[in-house]
Amino acid sequence: MPPKKNAVEVKAMLGRPSNNLKIGVVGLPNVGKSTFFNAITNASAAAENYPFCTIGKCATCPQVDPEESRVAVPDARFDWLCKHYKPAKEIPAYLTVIDIAGLVKGAASGAGLGNAFLSHIRAVDAIFHMVRAFDEPDVIHVEGELDPLRDMEIIREELRLKDEEFLTRQVSELGAAVKRVGHGGNAADKARKEELAVVEKVFEHVKSGKDVRHGTWSNKEVEIINGFHLITAKPVVFLANVSEKDYLRKKNKWLPKIKAWIDENSNGDLMIPYSAAFEYRISLLETAEEKADALKEAGVASVLPKIIVAGYNALQLIYYFTGGPDEVRAWTVRRNTKAPQAAGVIHTDFERGFIMCEVMKYEDLKELGTDNAVKANGKYMQKGKEYIVEDGDICYFKFNVTAPAKKK
Ligand SMILES: Nc1ncnc2c1ncn2[C@@H]1O[C@H](COP(=O)(O)OP(=O)(O)OP(=O)(O)O)[C@@H](O)[C@H]1O
Ligand SMILES: [Mg+2]
Image (cartoon, rainbow, N blue to C red; front, side):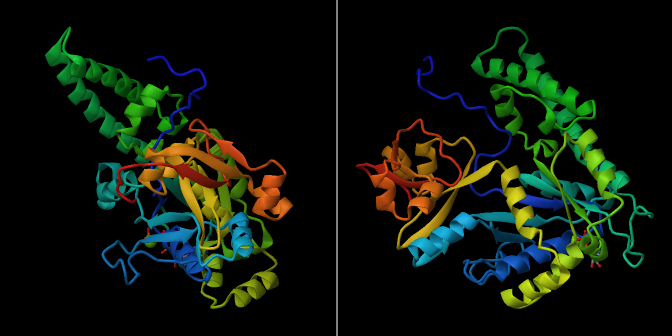
């Protein structure tokens, strides 16, 4: 059937379409991954107005890995909506962060339990690539001298080699299956041939030293690539961990070189300088006032909120809000999600029986003051099933179903 005239063609995205995506902290040993992980875990736990659960440390979910933490995504719009509606319940968007053990050179071929750790990386949806830019003689560097560029090269190469190894296997297995069929074959054989052509193309790309996420792929290719959970297809945010002293004086000799390396080798992916040691120290302070005083005295801000938001954005996630006296809540969807699927995140019924989505823009509500004022100004919109939900939309879904469906 040809696509409907008013249907919007959406570019397919690499990665899983889920609203429970995870970001892993990846790097060499002793670069500050756990210090960072503990700092964001503590920082979120201290945000008293957010219902928070450190998975694994939480009484209600003790079965989950303790190195996994769910952190609230800071958002001034969410805070404003909570003040505005004064709801009984406040539920922000969350980002799940996973602390992964350090990789060493040769990990792709099994060094230092490398394969086990690489499989942890395959299971996450995005990567915080932690780069050590602090010189601290007491903290051993596995490669000897401090050299962030060499370290980034090692990690990048290990991740790429793991994909190369996986694709080598795929090419050979699929190749053998296609050869057995020869010419002709049924629909499944045809699909396998198509898949082989894509796998070969991706294999050549990776073999030439490039990451999958930096390639240009058609929707069909993306669909096939997404089935493989390739490591270099995952978005990356680089975090340059500098000493507390350098962070406070806003100077570190490695930062320009790290930036130049990323521009040249990683398509200008985002890099955020920060100090794990500093953030961790601040995160241990008990009250919000103590933290504010310590930051004021140091003359800097914490960069953790920026890092969490960057991770969230790298995953191509956005959220819309629902608001009222019962609950203000952020609902996570991937970018380019249409209204019925966005509604389905709340409840499958909402998607199944979708009639329309009523939308207010946050800016309009903030400017005009009340829902009624937004309506009176003609800014309360009714949108249909082709509407692509935008970040920060305040939505109210209308739906109609006869048979009950499973609650999410
Ligand atoms: N910015 C920094 N300045 C100085 N010391 C730091 C900094 N960040 C982390 N450290 C110190 O480096 C050491 C190693 O940190 P951490 O345990 O977080 O590393 P890691 O990357 O998790 O290592 P592994 O891969 O072995 O788990 C710790 O003693 C920590 O206090
Ligand atoms: Mg660690």
